[in-house]
Image (cartoon, rainbow, N blue to C red; front, side):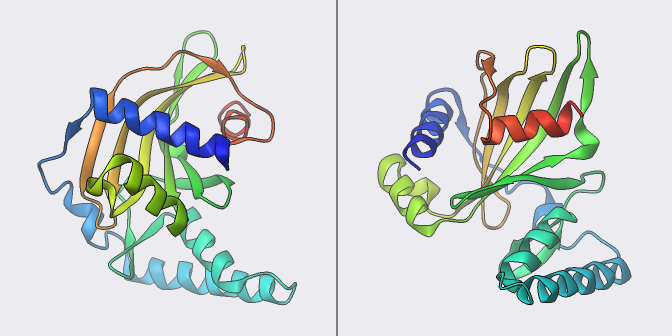
Length: 202
């Protein structure tokens, strides 16, 4: 938890130093459902069944349902499920008590020397963590809901780095964005970076 707090704190400090406050209300698709109603009903039914199966194994049915919906490409805004931009396919690759991490399977771009770029998304889930975050970084983040990040993955060297990052509130409106490539660093086994490398480099 301490390591994650330091990590996200460093990320936001970088955003504050190099980023800018988002002035537009952002793409419309973040605030409306952009999917076929029949497909949505099918997906929701599937995720509800997954939750029921999990509940039979003493797991939290609501949590399984939420993660299933996220994995199929939906997210919550204003208390309702909304569709993501056409052409994005978010797949779950890591989770802990503070966030759920997804990568956009359709955004993976191969580069020379077994290097790839990919978009990732962290859906924040810990209210306590967010209260601490706002206290440290200011009220502009009081409605922070998720972070999107462009990431470079070097499969040969098992290294990863952030290229750019943007933070959004619970209505999908941009709060702060930054383009500031980090240095490549080794992915750490059993942590978020290692999970992403395994998905992208498979």
